[in-house]
Image 1 (cartoon, rainbow, N blue to C red):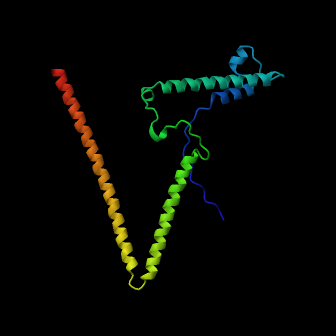
Image 2: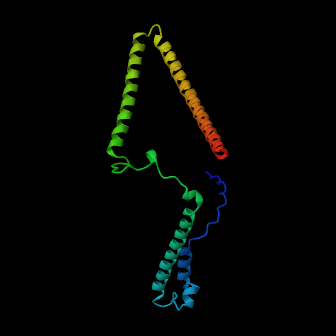
Length: 192
């Protein structure tokens, strides 16, 4: 069987090689121009390897300094200066000691309790529903009870969604009224 040719790869964006890579290549070829100008060794002779290692180390230090400067300039931008501190559940509590997958024992107890409760109640529900179905197999009452429970679940979900939307709208209206009142009070204070 002949293989179909694969689709052509998308064009790759050009990425500038790292400074340490460029300098190590230059050192392997015989040293950088700066090293030669300063009397540094090049590949010929026994000292070339040590000079190449020194130039690579210097290149890595220079690259590290370059990235530290870039990080400092990034952190000095206004949107990074005004960044709020972590609050709520994203803030690590004092004395928090993770034991497995960044969760402590209390978190694991809560997670396992919630899952066990959920699946146990679901299993009990299915057991009771199956028992009810087998007891009323002739009239298919279980089918109509299932339809009724599904309808109640759909109504409960719709009520939850609508009440959440109403609560958000009410909160937005309160905030707008508060801002309007604050603006009116500031205007009255400036005129007085």
